[in-house]
Amino acid sequence: MASTKLPWDYPRLHRAFLDRFETLSPHLKRIARYALSDPSRFALQTVAEISQSCSVQPSTVVRFAKTFGFSGFSDMQNVFRLRLIESSESYREQVHEHRGRLGAVSGDDPAAILHEFASASVLAIERLKEMLDADMLQEAATMMNEAASIYVVGQQRALPVASCLAYSLIELGCRCHMLDPVVGTIARQIATVATDELLIVIGLDELPEAILDAVSDAHERGVPLLAITDSEVNRLARDTRLCFVLRDAEVHRIAPLAPHVVLAQSLVIALDGLRYGQRSGAMQREAVG
Image 1: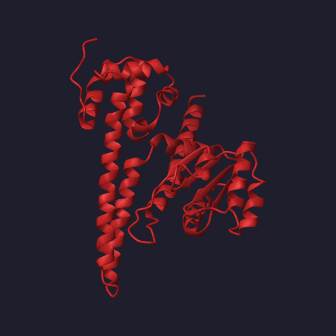
Image 2 (image 1 turned 45 degrees about the vertical axis):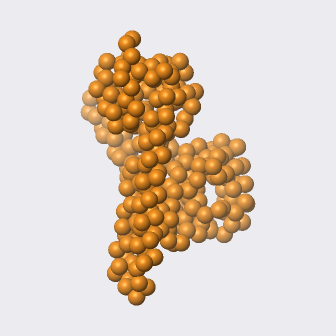
Image 3 (image 1 turned 90 degrees about the vertical axis):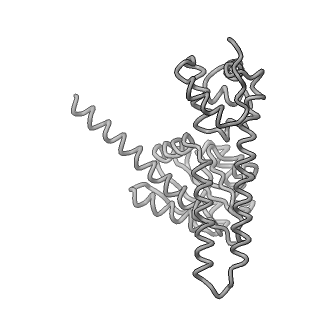
């Protein structure tokens, strides 16, 4: 195949994917769809990981890059990595600006403080929208739907997020339990979670070792685990089946919780949508039968 002009910047490569999508083979379409739906993950995964996610051979991932005129996959991935770096730098600059403005606000002007902190919260929510993996959201909804019971853990700064999630799940009619915030009690309660149940752990601060050990034990026992945390390299992220990573907008020592609450409520609404779809499908089958 003749080499095409290399679209070195992400917008041009994104446009090329869309323009040529219908001409691609079914396997290459899978990779294109994956890259378009989650460019941040595509920027960081290995060829083997991408091939597994797309159910294709590693050589197909390399062929995909060459189809668009790249000499190999690394050259294509560099375009995605540059997008990720530029996006992160822009976000850091905006956070720095918000931090400066918030620090300059007079302590006796609560309205101005509210305005700046609300703006920082909006920035964090926009970042969540930009970085959220739609497939992960769907998988989380499926995990909650398949669980006989759901147990939610959240301490310190994560406590209000965990409470919001547990309350919303109960309102939806789920069998949901908010675990006692006492460390020793949480560890013992985690040990009772069965493999047909789901454990959701929200860790926005360093969790006590006793809880992390209990989560690791649950993981080894085969208990489905879902986490919301602030780092993909901490123990909580490593020991869970599915992990949402939300980094704080560090505009103040009291970081905005708005994006975490939005994510928690989105998980519940996604679950409700999944259940509605299943009910509608069942009713249609009954009508046909």
